[in-house]
Image: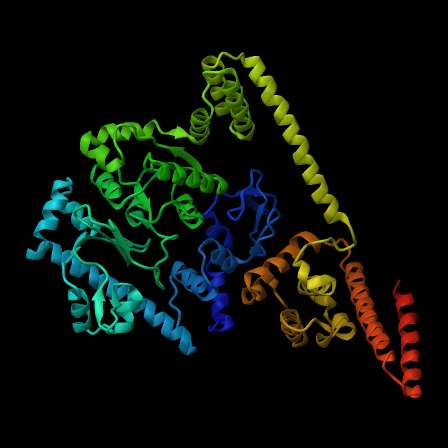
Length: 598
């Protein structure tokens, strides 16, 4: 729900130009009066994501995602509307007042308290590391090669070997039990007493992009299990969204980011001058993390561990980055199990040379193919070459494709002409399939006078055409008086569509213009996408008046058919002859009206 006045919402929207906001997440090219780019919400190779600077709408012709700046931020940042409103207000340097809804007020206050208690806990852990209780932890960290300045930069601390020392300290500072348990710093035992989640562990604060401490990771100093204990997800922390070290790496002058697995990998790399390293907080990269990486870097390099789990995580990460249109590479370390160990064994300059020699996504996939299909026999070699050819036809960069083809031709004793001929054959085959798909899609759109934009099949033809009608009236306000007379608000499908009609009719009835880009801020993302889809795809009419008549006639016909079904049902159960005669006469009137509509 929204707890802020419409005027404030509109002010936030006006202070966040959609083209500027979208450009922070993806590259846009100007085409005509709009901008196009690769859609961040589905995988595509041809840009179908449109941004209209005048209307302040975005719409993807591929996946039908659309809306205004609020809906874009809700989707790309995985936020609800109120969170997106706050996000954009912060971006515009605006301060939002406290909402008047008690539940929302509690949520806002709790989130603020969680950030405060996390900051206080980070100070507690840091001071504990510097004190007598942290002597062994200091030795452990110094033995791992970390300098005092590095410990300060990352805020590394130590959780004492005590059941509730942190909880007692925070309660003494006035923090409520609810805040301690919701933050994940404390847990309640079976007796209802607070106990610390983290005990006798090196503590790594996890910062969000704004530099707030949102969570912690705790590591043991020996071989005991579990090796790591992490904060649970909270109001201010989602492990699929945050990246360890990103608050520092985003400030790097390099135009690339290096993704590694562990806290220590990131810390060691930053200490060695490789200040663009980050770690995903889990076994693999998430779609949301991929979007954040893309926002801050032109090139993204994955360097996960070389074990089975690491290779799976690499494959998954590459898939996500590829879908998002990122330029991804893979850094393979052969003489160490991870970057931290490599840095401690070798000079930092040597690791930087490894980064410079990171292989492309195509090269990595070819190496994986070679592992699956040994080329020391004819069958394996043929399977390998077929797999390589399939990869080559997906490669858009013609220069890289040719370089790889020359290498394959040289290393696997196949002529360049033969390889090129097979690649061309499969490319032509792929083009034919793509053209057929485009033709089928265009053919589906060309049926009917008002197009066939798919809103939701479950809504049915009446609801779909009502949305067409509302979209048309919202862009052609002069049609309102005819619509109000022939298809008033009570005629609309009960629920959200009728509410939409009420808002539109009331504003136009009061003599005000109705601006679609203002109104859709109030709609959920699915309905907003439907409206924008209608506006961009299905409602581009050469003759709005004729389209209006077509839609109204269709809706009036549906209304009459519903009435006919109702009468037919009632006639089966009526014994009163006068009532039966009246219904039959009404049925004849309806039939006459229907014949005039055709």
